[in-house]
Image 1 (spheres, rainbow, N blue to C red):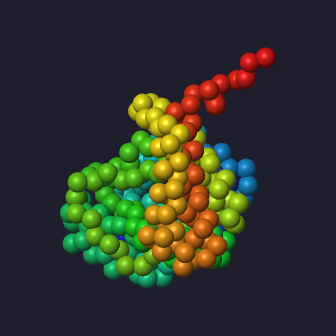
Image 2: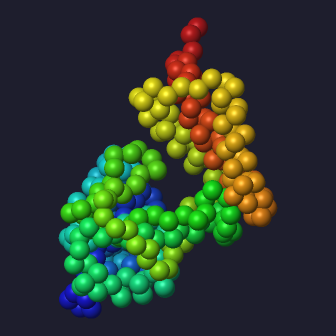
Image 3: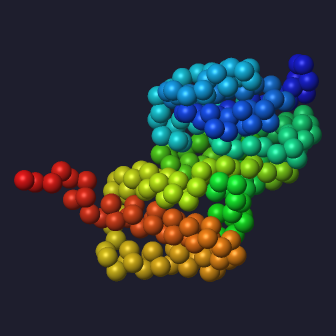
Length: 260
């Protein structure tokens, strides 16, 4: 432990208008030596909440998820960083696991830890389908790991050993079912830009096949049907996310202004 009994880890978050869950998110991180909030232009109570929890606040215009998170990591005071989203609450078991990490655990900077994520739509946990099980690498030493530049669905790149930290991140990402489809639509636009740059294209028949397979994979083979309506929504949203991105990449006319 560091001075004042804190864990010598920087908890870092990128935020913009994240007031909905931020109080709970930051309260769970109180034992960390530093909480760093990288804001990209919040107009709600986000900064007020962050200050109330003693967070250090920095500003950066949004660069895309991967680059933005890497910027936050670079600004941290400690080399060991825990990366959390503003809608993720680390549970008591996870907090205890952080506190139990010894100097020996952190003596090898190539080590990293992933954490299980439990995702919710409103108050309903999604227990089946392609969203589960979901493990995300979140605790690492920035001298040996970093985020890639992906605009969406960013990930940490490391060559070291990855262990699993006990506990879970409770991921309150979606307000309701409509929010699921709206969010997937925004992700699809970012994916389409990447697919165009990579030269990825798909014809109509292939798109239809991908849509069907995406739904069946989540709803049937990953047992999404056990989640009832939520299972249908997850399967449909992921299927449409991929198909929409590929369709936009394959048909540039949809981004062109119509003629007169």
